[in-house]
Length: 529
Image (cartoon, rainbow, N blue to C red; front, side):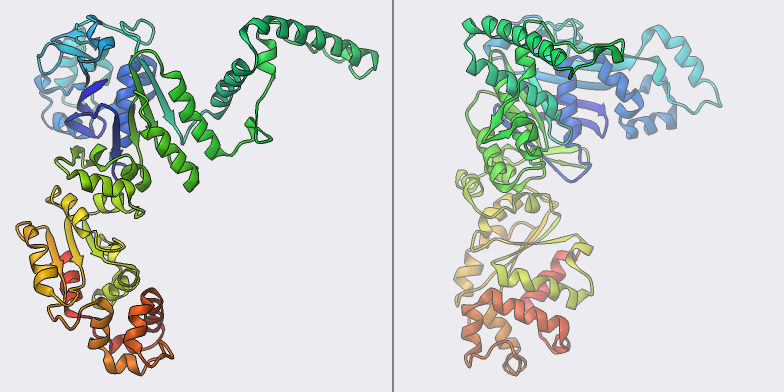
């Protein structure tokens, strides 16, 4: 399996070096962060495909920052080079027995097993390159004078036609999935399952006889007129003619008419089924595409099964990220790749089993407000607008409800990101010293983490604090017919929040409404750069 990947000057990656997990690797990041690029890089080196590079062009492959740096100096000794190196786990017997892969022809100069793609200035054209660089009017980068090489760490060249290895790998891009090809694969499998090998020749022979008889029947019934063109109808008489003419049915629906979501599952299933005998590497681009919640669960179960396949996934799905393990995430940002290290096993299991699907939203956000439940979540955006006349997203702030008291699970992740600001808005539950100050004391050392709560133990919950700050205003409102407004607010938290939000948006009470100080402090802290 792949143990390490190094990229240099490849697309948005100027220089990255990261260690891979042996089973599941999940690439997450914002749009344009480079998830697809990483999958493309891995697939490119494993395929040895020169044609893929030709289709892309070198201009689209080179890191633009490296190009600009060179263009500012035009120093031939500083011509940028593209490098992708894939290091393999020597413990894998299929790899360790293949000495075509072993050598020191890698950037680390260590004897190990691996493959590389190198795009470097062609030494045969050094004179031409020098001539171009010495031209004072020259402004175009000399891509034409570069050579593309696929090399093993033993220094042996390879291509898609002469690979010195037999690795099985598959790429499934669910946004561009070739549904027709996947359908053909599955129909072929159904054919093999339903017709015994000993009977296939007989079945095909009988099919050819029946096909020819059918044409004769059409002619006899004058349903077929063959003189209308120089071409006539013909049934394929090859040994696979029967197999190629049949289809398959699932729950009464022809497989060709399945929805796109079903076809996505089909593509991943087929990839798994065909990765069998040697090193197995599966690359999947956005597997969540077109899938319902239920089918996404099926996909997650499939990907989490112990199949012996090493999986690399690029995704935007919270479910995939959390269910397949937060410790399997690789975070992509500004051309760099980072990973969560040393997480508590209970924290990993929490996100795997939690119904809350906010892991990616939290991990990818730069400024996060964590609140306890629905009531806080419903009102916090409005409070934000009342203070700053802007929505949270306008200032790159994300509000996330943890649906209870799981703040510490999120804060453990926050300690791994020094550039991520996280504020917790929590109740004191009538004991600020114990439930807030003492409970979260270990996080005081982190400058990027703040815990905000009302200091007054009488303001024990968010709802009570709201009421005590706005008693006269709320008592005179039409939030409820109940004579015990605080009791209603605590009993029907979400409903109270929705009714209050409606009044804050439609009535003029927003000008008189007092937002609790601990919430104001949290908002001011999170937006401060």
